[in-house]
Length: 114
Image (cartoon, rainbow, N blue to C red; front, side, top):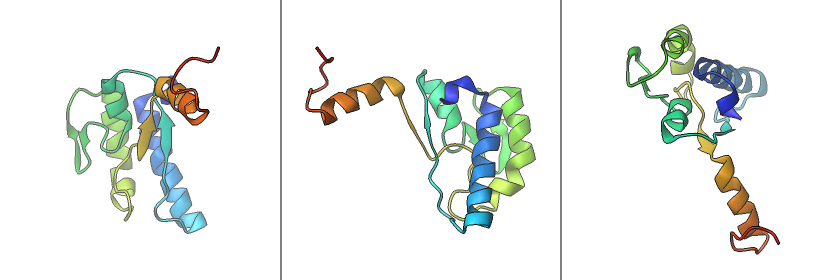
């Protein structure tokens, strides 16, 4: 779950996973999904650009200084990735909604099990 780690760690982890997948596994378009059960602001800081300009991480919305510092460290690495030149997750899902999806898939129409 993304909310249990810091924003700067999400950027580091996603960038390193993409680099490993590309260099060691030959997978250029590696899809990384994370669970986020939090506010939309928190979700936005984990996804894609992470509320920052990928070219200049000092230009950003409301993000922690630790994230800006990490993005500056990772910038060259993530910008060199041809398929996803961004530091954050490719996609997120909200844990609360995932339970509703499970119910629908089980034919329970989003109703709580009885």
